[in-house]
Image (cartoon, rainbow, N blue to C red; front, side, top):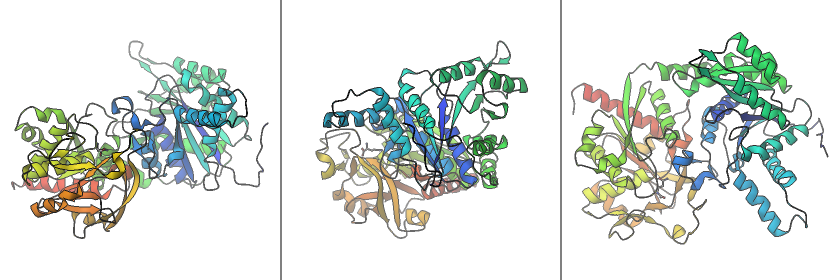
Length: 553
Ligand code: GLN
């Protein structure tokens, strides 16, 4: 039965974004850009991603499979597109913002085992599709004007069918003007023919139509700009109004150009008209200024090394690279990012020095397992001894503790028990809460935890306060038994849990800028509000660059 809402009550409008032709078109960035524009027009926007794969969440997946795992305030391990949502649109995501087929199926199967279906046959339609619709409906809330739901995967995949069927039904249950479909597609340039081709988009829209979805608008990713004939052809063959065909060409410098590109075509204005919503003015001056600072900064470039084990993957350290970019923009410098493979540091002494020569800052990111750890330790030693600004994150902080214990405190066999369970000096170890955990999914210390900073520390100076909240994703902790010996040798617990039990930050007060944190500050950095630690890390790196240029050591 179709349920029409009482028009006097608040209505959340829905935008569903599908993707066609190929994956990796940047649906997340497009969804996030649209959200930013609608928010700037004065609407309260929520974003959600539905992922067709069967893992319950991406928390257990390798970065090779999935890129970074983005952690929300409420501790959900989610798709990295949620990072784009939070960064572009400043919309806080939560567990409700990311559902996978695995999560949907687990809920239905748990209900079936409990007997909640009262003897019925449990089926994809209606039971799985109802569960998907319930996930979308989580955003039908008085505090949400427009909910944007991105369907992961590519139209035509077997596994995305239940999601497409669910959104088809969802829209059917709404009054006209309450929902719309946007299809992101590819218009490839065929070099040999010297032409842009619209056929793949026509076919992808054809598949959507077969399952009952008629897109209201097309956003066309393209290497070259579309001509009038392409817009007209796409409109005709895809059954979309001419003015609702948009182009999204590859951006030259930064993904933060995408919202400006879409705004220049009034995409958000057309969306609001389709949704019967008032179109207020759009102000993007600060955003344009941000893009200018990224493209043409006033203070030159600063080279930052990121020493990790997934450096060949652009997506594995996504939020870290973005946060570095925000920190650089805040300092009006260009980020010259140098990703370095930590395993390469394990081959010979002295290599760290050569690889890091010319770097004004070294960042060691998070990670799991043994591979690459010794190389990270070598790189950190170099940064510590040479006075190079250093930011260690999660495993990066744990490695900094091991390095300091080995080379300064005189514990040559110090290690994390994650790497060496039998070490005589477990400077990083499991706390009681984690000792008996057996399952891997969703069992780490996750999400937001409070932290108290030591007054006068670099961290307190960066944040401008001593009480902070940051997001975590780890099992191991600095072993509190070593905090005293660290302090005596010059490594300070600059941040702890409010009860003082857990070490959340380490710093070397005698070093120009050596700061490490157990949490992941990168998740909270925003383009127009760089995270304080990233901002000050880049600032320290610029200071080092300038001092070196002036001939100081
Ligand atoms: N492997 C470490 C732990 O579980 C660090 C995790 C991380 O860097 N995110 O504690």
